[in-house]
Amino acid sequence: MVVEEVELRRVRLPLVRPFVTAAGASVARDALLVRLMTDEGEGWGECVAMAEPGYTSEYVEAAQHVLHHHLVPLLLASRRVAADDVARVLGPVQGHPMAKAALETAVLDAELRAEGRSLAERLGAVRAEVDCGVAVGMAPSLGALLDEVGGYLDQGYRRIKLKVHPGADLDPVRAVRERFGDVPLQVDANGSYRTQDWPLLAALDPFDLLLVEQPLPPEDLLGSAQVARRIRTPVCLDESITSAAAAATALAVGACSVVNVKPGRVGGLLEAVRVHAVCLAAGVPVWCGGMLETGLGRAANLALAALPGFTLPGDLSGSDRYFSRDLTAPFVPVAGRLPVPSGPGLGVVPDPDALAELTTSVVVLRP
Ligand code: OSB
Ligand code: MG
Image (tube, rainbow, N blue to C red; front, top):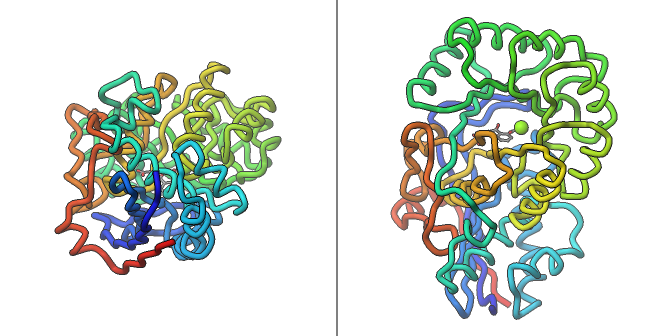
């Protein structure tokens, strides 16, 4: 198809409660949307970069800049483009996987909508609905944490994830276990431990966690392997897994036994499918991570999470866990599951009234 116009649109969605991690607190989702107009129709993608460079080095202002001045010009210069070509066309730009992923998603959406085919089918989905997990930010007190977790369990969420860091780990895990028994529970450290901190993680062994996510900094695969050998809880990697090649390396050195897959972190949905393939071949379970996406990004994540190797519940929650008003029709879990969108492309579009209300800026680029 021929890309005729690219719109970069910023939207700001207040969060229903602040999302607090070791890297900082978010009170709103400042998201960047990509809308393509092509000779065969439109396509949408969401860039999942956060406002601050606290998760990885990407952040939304930098993503907007690299899209505007580097990535979109490469795409527009290529004239005819298919989704399978986007990663190669954008190859001259190093890094910026979240910005690249948004552009590839928009091309995929446009292409699939023109074909009348769903993203789930294109990626190889084998399920029509997926289990919902929920990621709980750090709370101001243990009481507040237990109230929040209890609310999610009442709503039917099938797995709880707690954010932890050194010194704020054992107490919240023990409190949740004592109050709620053997609910499926895991923790995410966002790289806040060091190899020598392994006894703090070993102290969580008695609590039968499903996994500990990204205990060490992203580049420390050998440290992660050492920790994995010393603790009983399975180690899962998030920030470290930047590509299918990185996943293969992490598995080869024993750095993890579970993998979190996020399309934005690996440069797009098509690379995410290749990460899934590496893990499936190695018998390593994967699950779909989240980046507090709007309904657009959530639709793409649901399609991915329907692939066969996604055997653990993802950070895929209902719209109301994040926003009082989503950009798309709200995603509403039923009995702790969300349906995989089955319409053409992403299967959802932003609601024009929500866009009008939530947009903070628009830039339109043409060849
Ligand atoms: O580390 O998984 C993470 C949100 C933003 C950035 C990084 C992470 C997260 C989450 C939230 O944990 C998951 C969600 O979208 O519900
Ligand atoms: Mg994580």
